Length: 143
Image (cartoon, rainbow, N blue to C red; front, top):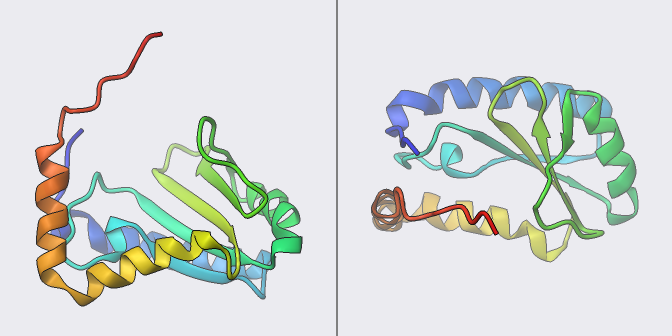
């Protein structure tokens, strides 16, 4: 996996986020829409993907997922799926994912993680070093 320096990808991710923000608000006017993941953290290295948290009322999560699929997304296979969390990935080839979460659920941890890193550049440096040190560590099992 190749990692990019912030200046190589963050501007384009922010532009994509703004476009998706508008599209999501059209479908879900009451949603909380937040740019999360490494592309939302100044100076963070990343594989260059965009993650967007879409927070909705828990009772409306399933309907929100259905509406968001109309933007060219599908439920991501082999990921955690609960009544309070559904991860969607783009079908267009863009490296974009929506984390659809129930508001006030434990899955707002995506925001906590982002905010802690935004507040502390030393943590960002440690995060970058950890990511880079793990390059090539994951081996896919064929079992």
